[in-house]
Length: 336
Ligand SMILES: NC(=O)c1ccc[n+]([C@@H]2O[C@H](COP(=O)([O-])OP(=O)(O)OC[C@H]3O[C@@H](n4cnc5c(N)ncnc54)[C@H](O)[C@@H]3O)[C@@H](O)[C@H]2O)c1
Image (spheres, rainbow, N blue to C red):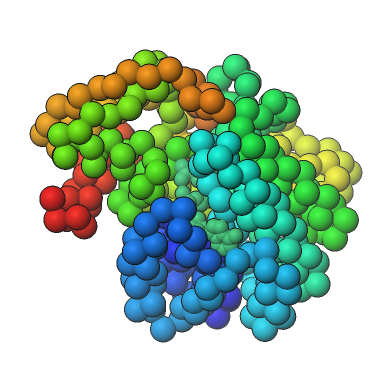
């Protein structure tokens, strides 16, 4: 039975990834520090669903704790590592940048050092569409230069990409970096727009709409994202023998390392997204129109051709269906 180490296991995406791997016959070691960045009870409830599987082992600690990952790697010798633990969120990185440095950079360093000692077959690390920063050419392509990050969150993620590339090159560690695009769905994060909007609308409270609603996002439904991750686990990058890389592939010429967008290849206007929440809740939103937030970008849009080429898969859940599923979960979970 192969073993997977999933960091950020009690997180939104991590809990779905763990469940999928357990269903697929993996033994899963889930690491999460249960940070109080948002409601810990939600993380505990997600974890409860994982603890019902006998092949699930839960570890509560920080990825950056010196020696922790090294001893986990030594004991578990994971075949696959999915690294999702991070301090996420653009706005909070202005308030508390140190937590991003520690979780995202030092944590990733500890992970890579452990992998150097006990190499897994494939490591997959979460980066973000925010890494594209100030790029204006849409849709965003993995082979585009991405040098102008707009938030410290994005900067730590882009740094993780560079650090991981150096380890892939030096120690021949196959690494895939995911760039996720606004992931949403049941069990979603309370700091993200869909959760905040749904909660406010159901409580008849106003919603804060940034950039006066002139925003576009490539919303990716969580089940689609996890399906893509599952397929990418089996598509480990191989260092090209002659340094030659095919057109459109982000594979490094000098390392078994690749960056892959996971998105829908569709940019949806925020106003249309809000309209779907109104439809699903049966209530209309009172909009509080606001200026653009510092560190944020007005649009994201994924070119998903590389994902398709590597896995044959393209995310397919449309926003109306995904939003309705979220609202149904929210009302049931919070009994509202
Ligand atoms: N949700 C999105 O739209 C989105 C978009 C782009 C990138 N990402 C990235 O995907 C990953 C998962 O995101 P998510 O939405 O599931 O977030 P999440 O906050 O729900 O999950 C992250 C989990 O990591 C844990 N964690 C945080 N710091 C830790 C540390 N130092 N040590 C151990 N555990 C720690 C948290 O307790 C949390 O449960 C993150 O790396 C995030 O940056 C998410």
